[in-house]
Length: 115
Length: 116
Image (cartoon, rainbow over the protein chains, first blue to last red):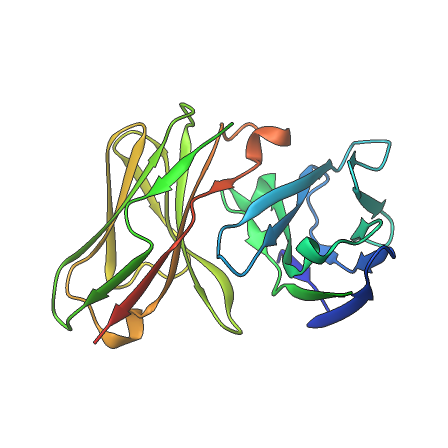
């Protein structure tokens, strides 16, 4: 069975500091994609970053990077230099070929950035 | 930029009413999805479509149906709304089913539906 686990329901970080949001996944498929989305209080889900299972390097997009540890089946999101606008829910997601068209989402982590 | 537009941000309906939630995307994406999001339950897939007039049930299709007559439009239908369908509904689209970053889903702003 495929599964995404986010063990941190809530996280606090001081403005301008870095924060790591944890994500572990489970799949037996060697080919899969991992995604992170941000959901502000307005409700819209915003795509942040993508990592393919065969990618040799960790993905980066501006202040976001994905710490991909394949053997541990973890795909943690690192946000550098946190800003007040980073306060939101963050969801880790995965699509594996054996899952058909479905993308599965974790339960999410709520991040609070303190001034 | 990809744009996914949901017809309403907020909707209030009565029990038993037929409800239509509309979603339009402007990037010629093959795949479209409907999710509902409830506190503590995360995102749950209701239906998805990988081509015009094609649809597949997701994890919680009961009480819902969908229509995709044109590639850009994917409608979610509540045949007879019930109070347990009060939720946030999110529509998404992705480029193709071929893996890689074509799987990235782009979401609409969501519709908060209240059924009284």
